[in-house]
Length: 144
Image (cartoon, rainbow, N blue to C red; front, side, top):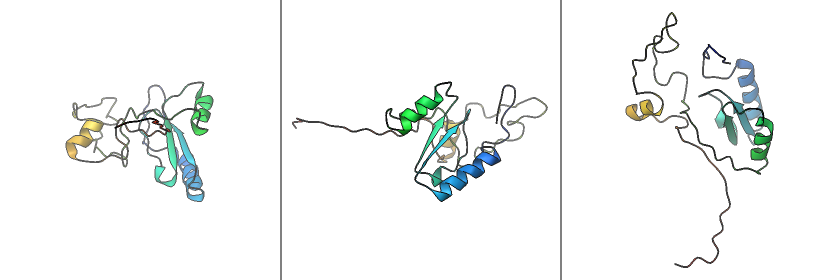
């Protein structure tokens, strides 16, 4: 969990939530994993048919999620962050994250997020801007 003035200790879900996600995905992979997180998160997406990641969705969360799950709205959002393969893919030092003595060292400069992955030739789990959607296209009367 996270809150004002504190960082999450890991990118994973709390243990109870992760255990539940793994149990459900292992028992029935034909379901959707819905996660609310304040930023990049490590979740067992490989166990599910689909995953919906919502960043601080607000009071209409229930309606919005139901509209996506029942196909009334297209889940066409794109990731505003890069999702890593594992904890600390980028090799942050303790001075860089979470910091030492309330002081954080930003020595990576602009080499953060998707820029780090590009610079090091590493493929993230899901890159910045990733997002899938579904639609039906009809093109009647086309002439070539």
